[in-house]
Length: 147
Figure 1 (cartoon, rainbow, N blue to C red):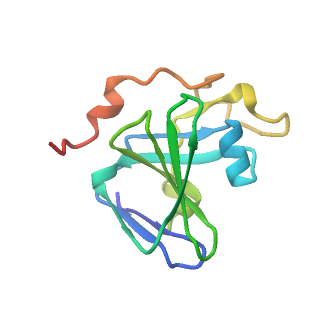
Figure 2: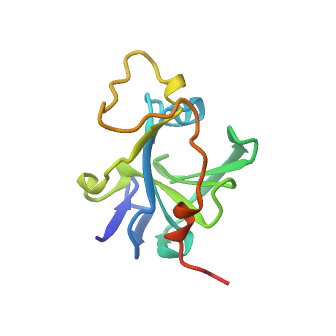
């Protein structure tokens, strides 16, 4: 599966050479504030499996884990595209709405559901976690070694 996408103006593009290792809808306050929406649909790929072209501006702040989270966006049109949570080393999050073919996004979970607004309609078939689920090693198994 070829996962590729761009920002609204096309100045930033990306292509992934491997499939997503994790995907989900995040309902945390930071994602809601950053997106201006009820949640953020995001998938994660190995950082060394994505090629990003164009200038990306990064904003860093402390995430729910207390560790830094870097959010990448296009400095021209403001499209939010990427996330690099320090709590998930070697992975980069990609906003599903930036995909050339958004139908390729297949969420696996809803996280931080305790913070979802009442008007947020969630897929009842997806597993739900009130906060962040424990990160397990299998997530990292899909990440190619860089050492």
